Structure formats: C-alpha cells, structure tokens
Amino acid sequence: MPDERVQQLIDQLRESEFVEVKNWLGGVVENDEKARLAKEIIALANSGGGHIFIGFTDDEGQGHQPIEPEENEETAFSQDAIAAIVHRYCTPAIQCAVETYRQTNGQVGHPVISVPAAGRVPLFASRQSPDNRTLTNGTVYVRRPGGNSEPCRTQDDWERLLERLVHARQDQLINAIRNVLNPEQEFTPAAQEQAFEDWISASRAARADVLTALPEGHPLRLEQGNYEVAFSIRPFQEPDIAELNRNLDHNRPRHSGWAPFVSLHRDGMAPRPLGDVIQAWLVGEEGRDRDPSHSDFWRLSVHGDGYLVRAMQEDDPDYGANLAPRPHRPGFDWELPIYRMTEMLKLIEWLGLTYASGDAAFQMRVTYFGTNGRRLTQHRLRYMLHRGGMAHEDSISSQISGRVGEIALNTEEMVFSLLRPVFAQFDFAELPRQLVDNVVQDVARYRQ
Image (cartoon, rainbow, N blue to C red; front, side):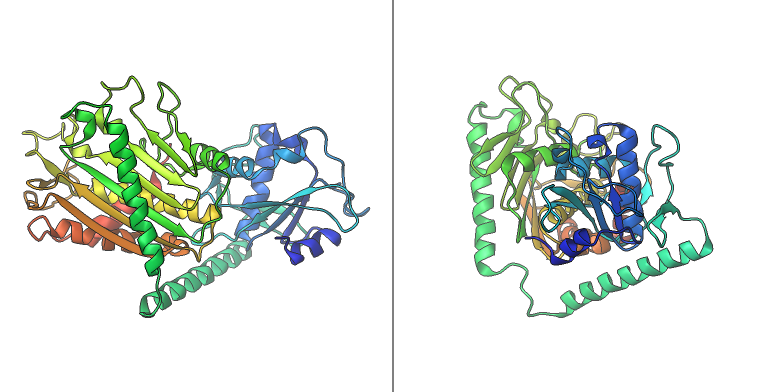
C-alpha cells in the first residue's frame, strides 16, 4: 500500500539528511553507478534510515523535475537489483524495500528505495568503486545536513552514529526481554503448529518420493546419518515463486562454502517449481555417484516454510583427516552443529526481513537421524573439549521460536537454546556457552 509520508515527500521533493534524489543513473548498468547508489544506501542507513527517489533532475535550485526514463531504466530498479547492489557493496547487508510512486498529477513512475536504519553495527563499504573515488573499501559513510553523503570523519560524526546505534540496541534488547518475560505470548498458535507439522510431513514424503529412484542401501539415501531442519515464518509476504527463486539464488546469505539452500544449475540439479514450492535435490538424474555430503534435499514455499536434509559431515571420508588416529566412527562434532544452525538462523533472518518484518514470528526445528552409537568428537583442535560421550537414541530433535528481528541480537542465545538439549543426549554432555559464542563469531566473520 502507498505510504502517505512517502507521497508527501515526493510531492514536496527536496534533499535532506533523510532524503536523497537521483536521476536514472543509466539504469545502474555501470559499476560506478551501482557504487554511487550503494554509497547513498550506506550513508542513509548509518544516519537512521531514509528514502532515495529515482528519476529526477539533480538541480535543487530549480526544483527536482521528473525525467522520463529511457528504455529499461525504470525496471532496472527492481527489488532483486537493489538487493544485489547492497550484497556486493555493503557490509553487513541490509534489506531495502522498493516501491513505485508518482507525484500527484504526475505521469512518471519513480522507484523509491526505502533504506532501514543500521541496527547493531554501522554499515561499511565492502569494496572499492571502479573509479577509486565514489566508494572506498572499509569506509563508513553518513549523511550531512543538507543531503550530502560523506565519510564519517569527525568526533561529532562518530558520537552521533554510536549514540544512535546504542539506542537501537537498547530498544532491541528491551523488546527481546519483554518477549521472554511475557509467558502469555504465543509465537506458534495451535493452528500454525499443526500447519508446521503438516509441512514437515509433506516434505518428508517429497524426499521419500525422489529416493525411490535409488536402490536400497544406496549411499545417497543417507541412511547412516543425516540432519533435517524445518522452519516457518509468519506472517509472510508470499512473493511470486520465480522472484523468490531468483532472490534465493543470487542474494541468500553465505557464511560458508556450502551454505543452506544451495542452487546448482547443471545435470538436472536445478531447483524446480512444484505448485507453490521450490524443490531441489542436488543429485540430479545422472548423479548416483555424487558425493553424499553434497547431496542436499531442500524445499522452500512462498508461504514462508523451509525444509533441508543434509548428510552428516562427520561421515565424510575426509572428516578428521588432521587427527591421528582418526576419530571413532560414527561421530558427532562439537563445532559443526553450531556453525550449521547459525547459518540456518541467518537464512531465516534474511527471508524474514526480505518478505515479512522484524516482528514476524518464526519457529525452527532440527532433527538428527542415525545418532544411536555416535560419540562426541572434534575435527579442529582449537578447544579442550570432552570427547567420547555417546548418544543412545536413533534420533534427537530440538526446537526454538522467536521474532525475526531478534535473531541478530540473540543469535548466540538462540543457537545455545536449540543445541543444548541435543548435546545433553550424548551422556549428559554440557554445551559450553563460550564455544557457541566463538563459533557464531566465526560465522559472522566469514568472507567469500
């Protein structure tokens, strides 16, 4: 729905600390123009958020006059295109909204990019612009009174920025505490809980269906062990399935070399539309000799439901290659589950902020299969951790729920809450909170 405040701004257009006006930037085809737009997004986010109005003359003195777009210029400012620019030039990436507005009695449709305020940390430029002037790698940009975007240089600049970030964190923390202390709040009403169970059952049936092509005992059945992650986000915008698939392929967060919901486009492994669900099995039609550790099965619905099955990395022949003697098999690593569940939470956060809001509720369940007889082990020797605790059940499951907007603030606590009961099934092993904190930070520091 049109925002009355944005309509008022476009009708009385002038640049300010929270409003930036740009021409069509050549349809952001050139990388210099992409970097120029990214600079404005970074500066607005660091200054509390704002709007970028596209398709006007730059002359403030004469008033910002509408410019008729040339071919393909108006459509160049799609949600996907802006997300790709942010992902390429900004860190941490944020989700900007794009809507088309017309001035009252105007004939030209103008893309308006709504930039949210930076939350926990300031935004930096993550790479250099091709001209080496527009955007400087590692620089924090802010807005000046009057509408200029410039590097954060002075003590006053930094004090204003840090004060705003501290207040934002305080607000997030207060909301998170309020949700914890409110026992009457239901993240997952009964009807939604049943829909979640139905989604998991349907996804398991879909996987069983593709496995019929494999003979009994085939390694790609992952019968030795696997883990399953399911999640649901409500309410959800329900995007067009093609747009969701494209956005997932190009812009999903990547915190490892094999992040969740991998899209491959060869040998019949590309994702497929099945009604309102995107489904992929990274085996393909001729992939029976494929490495089981890279044979994910996943599904994502336009309603905000996700499902992933992946092999236990501990069962890979190369796992623990740095240890002598090799760890006892089958094993369950101390660090790998923390890393993978953090990645999944960051994916849920990205989907929620892209197609819902920070107030949207999510639930997430992980189930490890083939755990009976597995023992705790460690493939990296960074920590002194107890090894050898054994699980005595064939499967172990755990679940958490919360608000999408709280994931960034409480990632460590959410991962700890999710996995603590899992590790307890290995002869009452206690998951060290410091280990969770350290591995979550490893995920945050990952760079492609």
